[in-house]
Image (cartoon, rainbow, N blue to C red; front, side, top):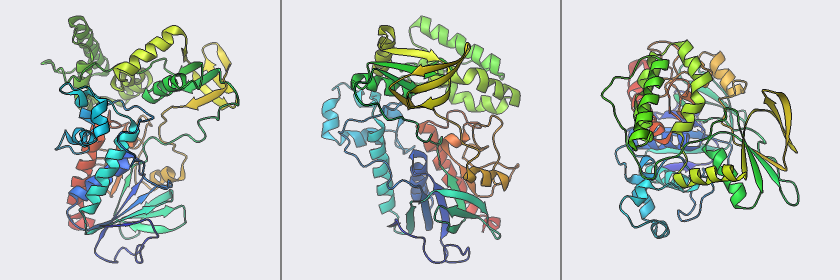
Length: 455
């Protein structure tokens, strides 16, 4: 094992230099680290890996007992990064005495628990470090530069241009940039008492951020602005699995969601809750998605996706209860509107009645955005034919293992992992799906490099 946060080695730009396969991962969030772990554990020959990210360190490494800042929307039972060891994260947590003392003594308490993003990050980072120590035949380098462009190499593979203007040759590249991050999204709070705050977004992070502002006394009132008007629904008190049906899922968008709604309503009347029905629907959504026409997929994006997301990305029950109570008491005001502009003293909103100004002492933007097609990185990839946009323009067209799809049976060595593939694969932004995709990508890459034409 070698970990080098330094310049690339001599011969890095020469595709004939040395015998090591050379891979790049662009991004060191969860998706990037998960791909690195999968390569370290599953790619059974020496290789040289370079991980690009302008941030100075990988998130994680904090003490597991430390209180976290951001809530995750999945239970401990669903967060293992080892698909063959579902209890891996649970066992890691339970080695910490502070964590055990915080939990109820009942059976399954840890399985059903929700943890912070910081705790999960510490677990992922430790597993990455352990996997790296096991590979004495692997070189891993951390490059603290952004990737500007990716182009075809004249012979094979890719040339990656980083922020230091160095072009480096790789055999395969994993794009793991996630959703992309808005710049300057959070405005600095005004001096003195903060009466009104604005939180923009409709997801788990937005709801959690609004509750934390109130709990910490950082604001006495929060306006939560959701473009769709929807907010995350609640998990059940204890984990539920898939509630399967013996009826086949209709093959049309309208029929499938009519069936889902009927099954969920029946489950609510029976007292079993809709969450198990949704879990089963999500397990079959990939096959449904493949059979939908482009127009049906676009209709899903326009009309169905916001409410679908609000039911698949759920809040822990305690957070959901606090959110409903805060809305009922007037401490949080939910407003359906589109934010046109963020200023230092509030936001400009597009509403059915026209443009309106919402004033605030502090504004926090928690929206999740699709990839920015105007970034030089994505322009270079798309213009050179290395990848294509999906029909919904949510990201890059990929197959189940993350391969960038440009034509049938054509693979050039570029992967677009995790949320970059949301237009092709429903739910690929959730931890279990990202884990499975990373393992599949490693298996696919290993088979590809063994083909004579890939050398």
